[in-house]
Image (cartoon, rainbow, N blue to C red; front, side, top):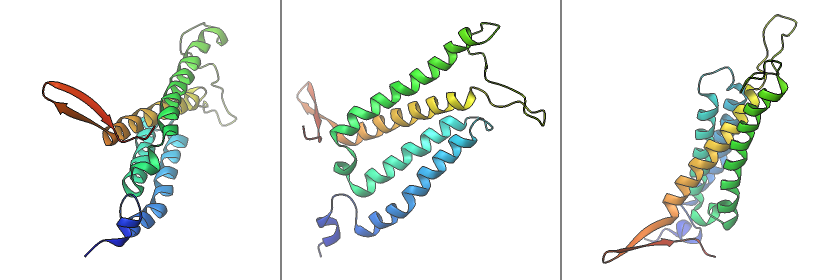
Amino acid sequence: MKNLAAAEHDGMSSIVQTVTHWVAPFVILYGFYGLAEGHRNPGGAFESGVILACGVVLLMLALGKSAVTSRLLFRAVPALASIGVLIFWAVAVSGMFLSPSKEFFRNFLARENPVGERTAGIIPICEVGIVLTVTAALTLVLVSLAVLRVKAHGSDEEFVTDIEE
């Protein structure tokens, strides 16, 4: 018997797609929660980036490659990775110019609040750069593994892509 739901849509069945539409926003929300709380937990930005990349992979598996792997994705994802690295670098270098001690990666935004605790300062800004870089890099790697394959012709190898130009 033919699976009519899978034949009508690219990707998995309509049940899996419906569940993904309910679950994916929570996965992405949890990734942003990790970003918001990441400056207090070790590895918060990296974990958040991995969770956000998993949300993209979940959508790709459920909805099909064509829903996620547009030409826009392959242009935007490397740009996001570069922007994340530039944010991290700019914060690190700005410590040399904006702090009195002129140290690289100096936390020049840290202040004491009325309770006596020190604020996070530059760390949340660095976390945003790390999350952008990790999310973009893992998304690009996983999507590339899904759409690129090697076609062997004798000893020559040729890359074949499923992306339509």
